[in-house]
Image 1: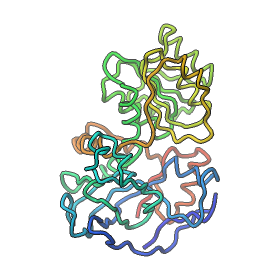
Image 2 (image 1 turned 180 degrees about the vertical axis):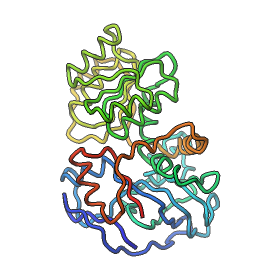
Image 3 (image 1 turned 30 degrees about the vertical axis):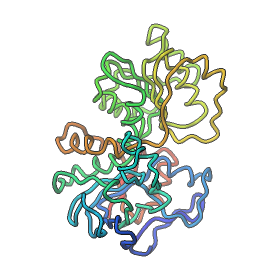
Length: 340
């Protein structure tokens, strides 16, 4: 089969990879209908994470081709969406709703690599969710988004306790930030402030429910949020970038007693304890437990109540994956859909 391999930072190739096979009785093999490039894939692309002939990709949706003898919840022919974190969905951590911390946790990016024609998914019963039927073609991008960016943005909004009567600020206008705007709207937030400097992303943020746009960053961004909230700060803030500046901006924009959901993958972020102490806020985040939300998100998409697929602003064939990486790295694309 064909799949994406990152030889080293900045060196992405599409080449023949071994076809996946059932190894454990809890495995399933799926034929991907579409895959995509994630903002977190740019970390190894830029040399922040190691890359050495690494099979890339962790977002996926497609049709089950084969299942192991112990798989009961999905069957051959089902169209499925899976989380970017493998989980059994039965352990104590999973049952508490944090499947991304499962005792059998594996990250699809490290264990599988789904920018490929096929993939072996371990713990299929706990990781995959079947759709109500075979989806219409126009639904596939949205279902694919549920695998990570939609589920991650949703978790950010839930962790920030977005809801009726609340003002939500979203730091970051990439795919996850835009999905956090969508989630905040669906969760009933009264006011949603999207922080963005890019006109095309501002437009999409407004489509998903943003009521205000703030272009300032850093201390100026914090000041603007407070100006818009009678000097108090937002009730709920989602941090969807992962840099030092965005993290401190998110903390500063959260009012005392408010909630911060952080879902941006962060490197070299240092928070002084005294700053967090006097912020007086609730903080929750990390790898999103997408599996917790998948059944609900799939149904919303199936019923055409949400359209997260609009976050894909560039579509390329798998063979042009290297161009997709360049486009996202150069901010010429928000999120790239790869087709077969």
